[in-house]
Image 1 (cartoon, rainbow, N blue to C red):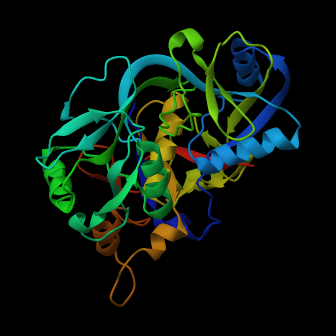
Image 2 (image 1 turned 90 degrees about the vertical axis):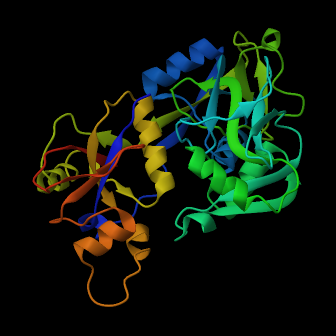
Length: 361
């Protein structure tokens, strides 16, 4: 898996904010099978659409209804079984017991800290986490409501950040201790299924209709219906229109200084340097860059105003040390913090030349 490290600088905090969207949706009319639809998407846009959230799914449904269509191809296809965290974190630690076989399953944490493989449609308590909490132990929120794994994911994303992911044994112990109020298993954010996105995206969002997905004999492609439900269908069905997405970011081919990067992003069809406003946006950007096969490395991007407003300084102007300590994101003219998942921060001076991520008009 390609890991993309992202470098933040405060200088761009005063440019217009960018929404947490790195793509736009498009509809191609005309009956096509999935192979034809995907080819049309790749020729005219980026790929078949990857759906990240209820909001995306609703927008696609509205597009269907507005254009008077019925069924649409999305980019989910059956592939090899794999495990993935709901929030997109790489799976670096696992403690999964039980056998899923050829079934989709999700992980629940037991009172002793081990994990159990369970059918995702069962209901139980669950653990959310909230990005930005000041103390690690306060970062976890046990919800004493019985929901399926998919319902729990929606709840956590609407009220907090996401279902909890666990990167090592220490964090597993923290989550176990936070879940002591539960006398039974509770959902964590690990999903194991055999579905993947055609563009390489790692979204774990699913909105299956009741009784779906069915076995491979019923089909290995996915159709979106006007009500928002997903159905596994034969890829050869040719009565579908096609839903595509187009990336709205541009990554330079060459490395440059920060000052040159700011200027570069203002020319041509570029609309300014890309601002990142949250950890969730960084993860989504990294996913977008991976699916576009952008080589691993550091990029110039901007720290958005929301991240700037999260700084807690008792008095006086911000210093480099304030920003490093509280956001791990130093301002321009300070040593820059380049960080990659699982690696310690690496400090470089602002004269470093890096590729840059820009917004497109």
